[in-house]
Length: 51
Image (cartoon, rainbow, N blue to C red; front, top):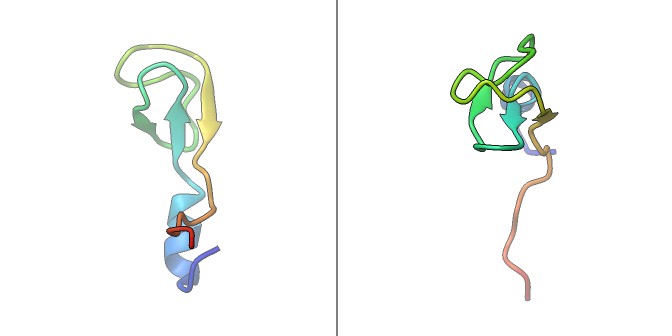
């Protein structure tokens, strides 16, 4: 998780479409862009450059 608790709480409300990678609200049953019903929660890990 990141440094900011408020930002982490907002990120956890986002769902990503597995088909078109569109962002959706947490209560969504299907994607707002393409209508696909396969949604996953947004990843909470931060990406950092490796050594």
